[in-house]
Length: 295
Image (cartoon, rainbow, N blue to C red; front, side, top):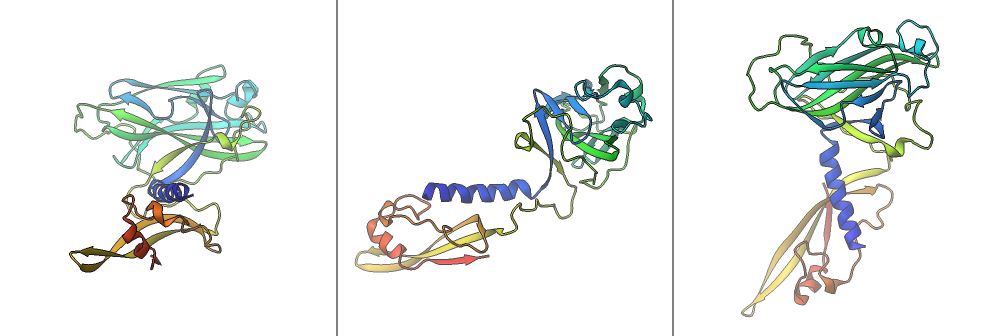
């Protein structure tokens, strides 16, 4: 029980660190394909792939829903109930203050036949190394309902010899992160049996200001910082001294239910000490008075 409680506390504090600086967006990977919350399925680039300046980033998009859409639906202006209007792609990084056009306009959909659209993006030497999002903007309709879905694919760009120059071609103003979209609940082309339980989470970093936090799924669950202060008596040469032992941790709890928040354990196993087993003479006084404060 103690190990579980400590693990829960550690996970709670870790989750806070991970969730506070990011906005969480979901895609569902299946057999190497990334199913967006629209009509498109991204074959490449892969999540968290690495690319070098001077080389190309191959982009591949399955636009037919793996054969489930008619060819007419793949071309803008078809007026079908479920069809594409446009796919635009941008390379974005709030950290390096970059928003570059990769491809925009109808050409990505109209210049190639078949069920897959391809594009090779040559990384310019002005790109600084770091974490980026290859961000896909899809405008389409799904059963007559307008869909506008933004899908960021996190990638790493390496540039061992940055030129120091500022990019001048295809430059756009960096938009506030995150951007709102009007996505479908999930891809209409997910294989049978696949759902949100298979979701892989990606992140979009914000630039400056207050970082967004993920809303808790259960409003009755809150996160608290627990401070345990306990007296410790030490006897040396007949002289007894009193000191205070302090242990601080972060944990989640239900606001209406305090049961189980402090683990109950035997005093002789030294479990309440974060530094291992305590001497028996100390343990008894250690358990005499425990003060819990929530800050």
